[in-house]
Length: 408
Image (tube, rainbow, N blue to C red; front, side, top):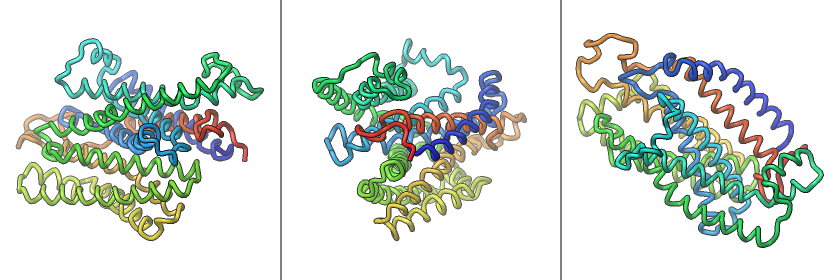
C-alpha cells in the first residue's frame, strides 16, 4: 500500500478513534443509559452495523472457499486478502454485537452452560468458530513470508519473529503442510459459514410478532443481502489493491446479477406484503416507504445504492473504473438496507392503544440513534479500517510474493 494513501487513511482512522473514545467511555461506564432505544425498541444502530458487517464477510468468504476448497487457481492471488477481509469484518461484527448486549462479559455462559435449543447459542458457537478458523487460516497463509521476513535485515524484524513464533526456517514440507491445513480449515469453514449466515437469518425469521421478519423468505433475503454487500466489498478491494481487471470484471458481473435478483425479491416482498391486506404487515411496510426515515429507502438504497450502480454496470461492465465505483456505492449505502430491515418492524406497536397506556421515553417506538451510538459506531469502524490498512501495509496480505510497505 502506498505510503501517502496509508497516511491519509490512518489519520482519518485515528481521528475516528479519538472522537469515538468519548462514546466508548460512556458505553463502558454507563451501559445503555445514553442510547436511543428502549423496551419497545430493543435494538438500534449497533445491531444495524452488526448486520452490515455480517454481510461484508460473505463475498470474501466465497472467494476463500472457491480458492482453497474448489481449487480455482485464478483467484489464488486474492485468497489471502479475502481471508483477512473476513477476519477484520468478523472482528467489527463481534464488537458491535457485544456492546449491544447488556452484560457482554457474561458471553462465556453460552459456552459453559449452553442451551442447544436456542438459536442464540448456535449464533455464538458459529460466530466464534468462524473467527478462530479465519484467524488460523490467515496465519498459515502468510507464515512462509513471516518466517522469511523474520530472518531478513528489515524494519520490524523482531515483530515478524514474534509472529513467526520463533521459526527461522521454512521448508518445502512446511509449505505442503500449511497448504493442507489451509484447505482443511476452508473445508470446515464451508458448512460453518453456511450455518453462520443461515442462523443469523433464522434468528429474525422465527420471531412471530414481527410480521416482516417472520417469513420463510427472510433467510433467503438475508443470504442474498450478504452476498451482494460482501461481493461488492471484495470486488472493490481487489480492484483497488490488486488492480486485477479480469477478476474485477468477473466478480462485477456476479455482483450485477445478485443486485438484480435482490431487488426482484425485495419487490416481491413488498408486493406480497401489501396483497395480504394484514394491517400489521402493511403498517411495517408503510414505515419503510412513508415513515420518517423513508429517504434512506428511496434515496440512499434505491437511487444511490441500486439505480446508479445498475447504470454503471449496464454501461460499463467491462470498465474496471465503473465496476469499482458501482461496488463502492453498494457497500457504502448498504447500511440503509440493514436499517430498513431492522427498525421499521420494531417501530410499530404490536398492541393497539399500548402507546397511550404508559408514558416514558423508553416506552416508545420512535427511534433516533443517539450521539453516543454514533460515536461508538465511529470508533469501531475506525478500528476496523486501521487494522485493515495496517495489515495491508505491514503484513504479506496482498500476495505470497509481495507485501509490506510500498513507498511508490
